[in-house]
Length: 297
Image 1 (tube, rainbow, N blue to C red):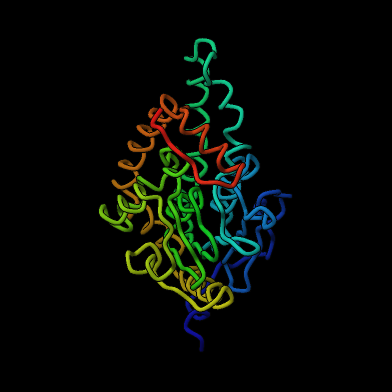
Image 2: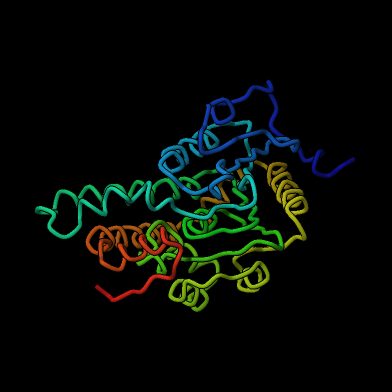
């Protein structure tokens, strides 16, 4: 008898919870062939699954619904189309703030307080993945940039296909990464590798990502990647859900307190110092498809 099948899975009526039935616009959520496994795809392949306003609003609701669904025991998180995610949609999410906090703007305490709330809401969205009691496996193919790295750092396990490329790119955009990668990756890839990637904002390939521990394994293509992710999720789902949830809670204890403290600090930092001439130059250069020239102003 197959050992995974013999270990047992959730029993009861095969009904679909809200995570599977809600009309999400930034995600698709489906039940995998493996019992107890849900597959969440970022939906927006025409834009590289960029993280716009709908993504940030829906992400915590998706994972709250998966967390509350007893039929779900493990989650695979992947991107649709050619990439996992090309990161934050800067114009859609931050565009309004470029004018509010620019030169000649009136007294800014209220606006900066509002920006602090926005940053904390983005942080909370990513943290909903880490807080989900069900284990989350991120399956990364193609580009995983900026906010995409924040997202996979909140997963329990990361796997990649050979074409995957990663970048903590915020410094190239004159932004301090503020939704989790700087806090979570320290415990995943270590201080030295984290500082190298965050301060250079360089791109790395899947082999380098595996070497530094950002991903556990690399697979030849997206098909093999998803098969491996689903297989691993099936193994997790076959175990006692109480034991799995308890193990994740114990692993998170202590670490999450340090992460929360770091998130509070960077939220205050960016609400105070985010707006700069360098940021405006980065946004302009992005629109003009040219390298930015930073002046430190």
